[in-house]
Length: 88
Image (cartoon, rainbow, N blue to C red; front, side, top):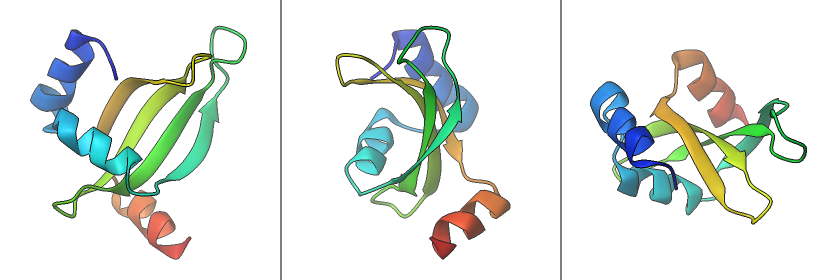
């Protein structure tokens, strides 16, 4: 998932629990490209989805070569992000 510092930041800064991150990835999220990564084939993406509790979350991650997601950040969607998510 992410480093211990990342997990701590998600909880303290954005009040997003590790379980919620797993729930979003497991609930057919919508993906979008964010930016080119520092290393080849390790770009930054966003996953938009809902937790089991109904929170609309956006997760930022690097899709690693080993097919794992390295979580960079996660937070509640903005109003604009939520509208776009619900329209798709």
